[in-house]
Structure formats: C-alpha cells, structure tokens
Image 1 (spheres, rainbow, N blue to C red):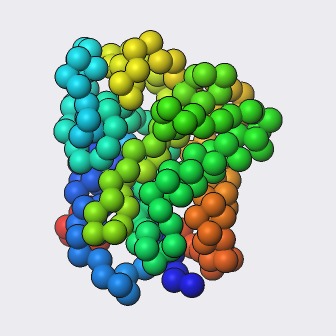
Image 2 (tube, rainbow, N blue to C red; image 1 turned 180 degrees about the vertical axis):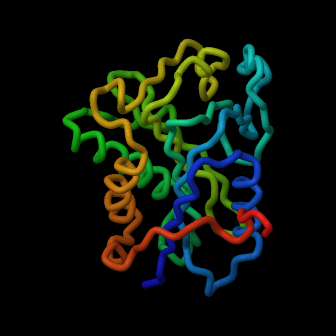
Length: 223
C-alpha cells in the first residue's frame, strides 16, 4: 500500500495553495506519495469552470478568482475546513464517483458522531442537513490524479454566501457545525474527519502511520 502524507497548511491565501496543488499534480510520478492537505482560507469567491456570470451577485470587497475545478461559484473563508485529496486515482483503485462519495460520506459519518443526520444528494454534490448545505465538493482530475476537494463549514461567517447563488442554486441556505451545535474548532474536526476519510478512500491501513506534516516547500516563504 502506498504511503499517504497528511499536511496541515493552516490559514492561507487561496491562490498560492491552488497553484501548489497544480504543481504537485503536474510534477508527480508513479512513485509520488498521495497527499491530503487540510487548510483554511482568507475570504475569497472561486468560480468553477461551469460558473454562469449571473450567479455572482454582489462580491463587494471579497476577491474573485476564476479557477479550474468543476462546478459553480462558492465562498471560502475563515472557519471553513478545506480538504484537498491529491490522489493517483488509478493506483488507488478509485473512480471519480468513488472519490466524491468518499468525501461526502466522510462528512455524513462525522456529523453522525454529533447526532446530526446529514446526507448527500444525487442532483447536487455536497452534504446537506434538512436541505441546508453543510459541505461542498468540487474536483479536478488531471494526469489521472485529483486536486481541489471538499469545503466543510465549521464556524463560518455565512453572510458572504448571500452575495452569490452558492453552487449555482438560488436561495440555497448554508449552515455550519457550530450552528448545528456540534463543533467550533477546526483542528478537532480535522482529527475526527480524517479516519472516516481514509476509510472511505480505502486507505485506512495507513491510519496507524499517519502524521500531520507542515506546508509543502512550494508554499514556504523564502528565508
């Protein structure tokens, strides 16, 4: 079984992390270990490849970036846990649908730990509680490997979501774990989510040897 590297990036500006994911994917080879990056971002709206202009209503002072994942417009900001699986899908024996399901079901299982009944939807990727969106999924597959990933609302200012049609849905409501009475600390959520994620990725054999590493070299500031 290939080793997997887990990285905790902390609070980061969005674009350098996106560029680092691209670089990792474009330069990896058959011996490159898969990685999962956990991060939190400064406020930003990201426009997926399928975003229609009318879904960006009033961004105001929040930056807007056109990126290369699938899907529509969404918001990232402090208090939201980002999960980026950088995985060689063929080597892992996973299809794209398997990866989406793994991300979604990991959040469903995490929510269940807090007594919250969450579910995915066949018509719109993500995880919902009583029709209100808790987590979003958007991926890109290049050279047989995945990047981008999951955005899980932990303790987020939800006001920026009112400036867009989230994921292309007008009047879609958003929630977070804090509002559901579950958890406010991102590190706690990360640690609880990781075992579920590795299990659904069929990588749970690696759980006993997983350690949280720092940011990749491409994101480190020069001395």
